[in-house]
Length: 458
Ligand code: GLC
Image (tube, rainbow, N blue to C red; front, side):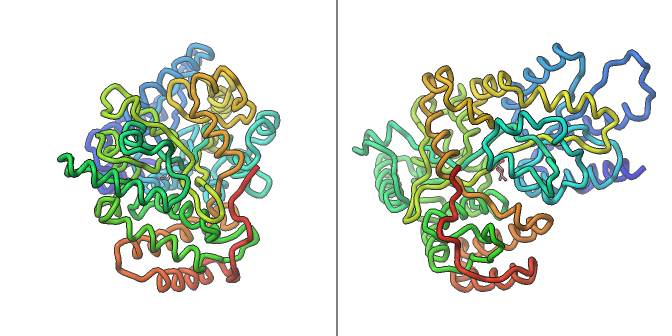
């Protein structure tokens, strides 16, 4: 059986090679084995259905809260759900998802998929349009559009993500700043001053600004924000112009390269989301770029900065303040033996009340635009207005829709180019020119300048 082969491979190489935690490896193997065994034994007619859900959770506290959501679903429907843990790195997740779907065997029933994946994975999932036409019309249009490929609704958006700036309210006050930085120039100045001050007080590990500089998808998100804010475009524009080799993008990369070792740790070029979050919640940074989900850990009981931080729009440049649109949708595997139940699970997870509760408990932003006007969410959570503003006026989209199946090659090339500038291996003009040629070869699109306004607003 092909699926067993993948599982065996997973145990030998796939997981072991790329998962940092042995515990995680064990738990993935156990869950995979358990549904493999489920498939081998013939269920009696009365036995309740157990669905398998694979999405991006890799954090225990988060999964616990998530389990409660799923238990509620089981209470309502009698359908059980087993939640698989996932690798930490965005690229490793895609490898695992592809491996499982590629077997053609009944693996997980419902998959969480990143907003940039539909073009690459569309063939493996059911078209959700006939089931969710109403629900789609209530979502932020740009978010919902991300999951449509050739008129097929590959997944239902169920959590929205956008790049945000986290800042320390206590330190800003101490250093005489009344508000967070509005521009990247201001951020540099503030970060340097606070860093120097904290170090002088003996906090030798303290850094001004942490972000995601590892050669992974997080870097595409961060670097796109730097360049789009300066009018440096979105790598490949909506009209299929390869625009990445332009002076604004080059300057934005050069600036970030100067941060490495000055306001950001030298090791930031190896940071994924978790690495930056760990420095931040230890109280060792003044600013952090992250997703809204980082709020949960920052406010958790063990966090050194609980109640000492806030979120803001990312700083801007000549074209404004933008955050990269991220997010996850739910897709139903076309190999699922339980499509009816799987659709029911998706319907539950995107339900209005479940999204409201998910924001309250886990701080995960809803995808229904109407919820952003809800006084019961806005009033106790002033940060909700920041999210609202970001989703309505300040997001930039990665070029996944225009590149479809080629997106992974495009983002890999971009990541390598930017990373080589951050690590000083290449100059920014050299890296941008080589990247432009590589993207022409990969996509067959033409070169050209960025569109006048690359940032997306509703
Ligand atoms: C978050 C975003 C996702 C992005 C990933 C990068 O999970 O929701 O869209 O690709 O981070 O690490």
